[in-house]
Image (cartoon, rainbow, N blue to C red; front, side):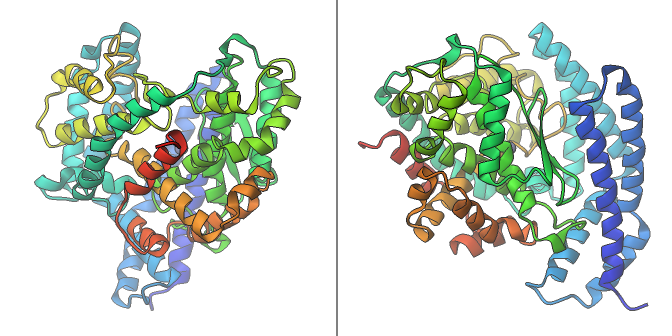
Length: 497
Ligand code: ZN
């Protein structure tokens, strides 16, 4: 039979539907599942994942891909991108021996339990033995895709296709040399402003304001929902149903607002992908870094800007007239842009944040290449924390045990956060060149020019281009750049400099 894209699309659509169905079960597990139903739910998800794995590694799918590759479509067609993505996913799925995949999933499940206990007892040693095993298994996994000297590249590639350690080393070195001095200067220059933690902001009003904000950003409630979870996230069940969640703390209303804006940034990416890519592996962001660039651009560049609050602060005052009665626009901006060194990554502001990633990157690269022993992690962590942020964590829980990524096998994931920050700043420069009056539009509460620009330039392509290809299309240069990000921080936090 002649190779046929209709057949490939059918096979891929089946996989996409199973994935979406599993995502529905997982979303429900995080939002509305009654606590007594957890065991049953875990079984249902596992059953669906077995089907998913069978479909994604089916020999018929491999034969379709093989046959189509004999007469490859022209580059720059959707078919070309689809076939390339299908090959990539199929290889990732079939090249990993079943014993290794099972060993990894069992060990990470056990390590997750160890991690929870280690955090409770503030003792890294509880996690160390299983973390050691995970690192060994990840090395075996990476060795299936790359030679010994490039094992970490293979792990990066899972999240950031085509990204190399060599390129990251260069860009991260620039951040490493510039950030600590910049942080010192920003902290020295910043004005004191109010801290709202002595006031209560009722949950219902926080949620109502957040819904107004994401609506203004263009989140479509006909194709999505906003609900509450312990940890905010975004998920989609295909391109016509994108769910976001947030977390509410009555003493910290900024965290709810900013997390809604962040997750909505992710959601707009999914909602903006060309419908013709739905139910294919291209119905996704170009990479985790590109996805994070969208959430962070909205959260940081937009929702911490003076222009944005010129439009939305009066609205916020209507929801919280008493709590914000004495708060001026400049007080509010000082509060939302407060910079301070924290030992906790997820509590960090945009100026100090990337130091947390540099530290993790330094360490995980060494772990994967076998140059650092697991037992030495707490000490190494604290040493780097002092070097980058002049802080010594009070204990392991607020130090090396703070993130779930390593115990769940997510080596190579952390750099995507910084890649997202760098891309957000680069896009922010570009959009200002192309839409000169953008800040005035934002100050008038009009967010659709920015959203439409992002849709046109980034979102609609989905995963059609590799991250490097998309950067080449956008910026005329495929390389990652630290310059725009450093310029952005300087302009916002040291305007006098
Ligand atoms: Zn995010």
